[in-house]
Structure formats: structure tokens, C-alpha cells
Length: 234
Image 1 (cartoon, rainbow, N blue to C red):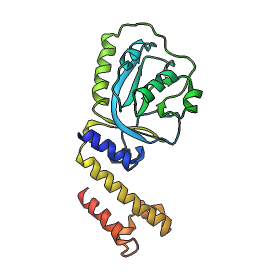
Image 2: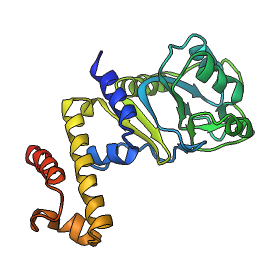
Image 3: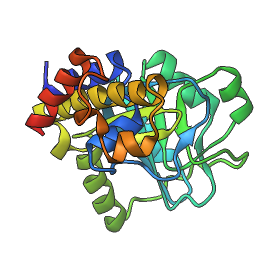
Image 4: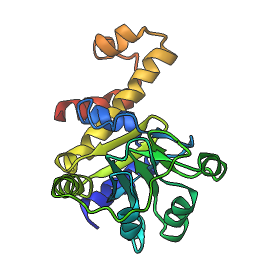
């Protein structure tokens, strides 16, 4: 099992949120403007990159025809203006027949009422009734260059999708240190919640002053020792 698969499984198992992952990545990694079409889903996994361009999804259908299973499908809408990349037929094909984990796009979706009714795990920038055409428009050399650059990035990354949006864990973060930093943030959140909700401390005392390190005995030792262990390593 490769490291991407191991980290993806960890993120799903421990329900690591986009918020937590972006904290680990120094407040970075959020894919701007992409929001969930349906709420309550938490998914993560390796990525298959595909694209639509110039307002046509002809080449997109071609790429999806025999797409591999168990991936998050990232659909890059390049120069598609406000045309939807596809709708419910393609979405169901990917999620049911090709067993994709989720669909993420920086473009629009059509057939939104049906996609909401079926509660499909889709993240996009919105909905529109106007879809792409199916013209066999050639891919220019400029678009081809963009596609290859973005394909290398996304297919060497992990996507995390939840109600806050989508975070990309790029190849520079896919290492053993990422898991350790996740453990540190989980331990820190546990202490912070205890201080604010149980001890009734202010968030200033807790988050900024970190008073729990200065006042002995107020936080359960097992929680504090775990945090100290990760703090010393960070």
C-alpha cells in the first residue's frame, strides 16, 4: 500500500476535516469557490484528473468512458464560461457504475434538482441549466500544456471533501510528518475544548496564552502529556 493510499484511509477513518488538514498545511490547500452540492458527506482519496474545455465536453466524455474506479474525479473546466460540465446521467455513471468516491469540479453542474434528490457527493462552483455542447473542438497546445501541468499536480495529491469545501493535500505534504502533525492538532483540539467547555476559560487564555501549560493540575495529565509529546516534536 502506497503512502497516498495510507494517508487517504487515515483521513477517512479519523474523519480528518478540511479545516484540520489546512491547519496542518500552514493555512493553505483550500480550493477556492468549490462548495458541496449536498451536505453531510466526508470523503477523501486519490485523484483522477479529467478536463472539459472551450465550452464542449466531447473530450470529457471520451476521458470518462473507461475511467478507473475508486478515485475522486476532479473535472477541470477550462474556458467553459458558465456552462455546466455535465449532469445527472454522467454523475450517476461515475458514482454508481465506475464507483468513484466523489466528483469535484471548478465548473458548474446541471440537473441540480436530481443531484440533490439523489444526495450525490459532488462539489462544484454552482448549478446552471445550460450545459456544454458536444463539438469535437481541438485541444490547443496552450490548453494541452495547462492540462498536463494540472494533471501532474492533482494525480500526485489527495483531495479531502466535506461541508467546508475541498482541500488538496499536495505531493509536498504526502509524507510521514503529515500524520504526526494531524496527531498534534487532534491532541491540541482536545485540550482546547476541555479548557473552554469544562474549565470555562476564555479562548484568549486557551488559544493565545496557552495557560494550561502554566497552571498545573487543571487539565487531565493524560491529555496534557500527549500534547506535550507532540509539541516537543513540532
